[in-house]
Image (tube, rainbow, N blue to C red):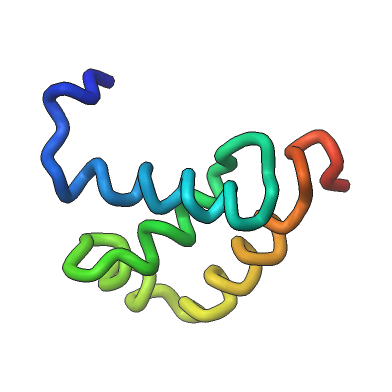
Length: 76
């Protein structure tokens, strides 16, 4: 992946994931942070995709719970 070739819209979830990890005092960005950032992105492609799933709110809740750990190694 070449970040210099990414659009502004594709950069937004990565910045959002970094902000989310920082706010939760996580030392790393996890896939859960990225999923949550993608779900919160206005005009992004993820919300419609997840809305078509049976339980989009369950995905958001599970990702939010998973992102609360301080590191990936601490999760069971």
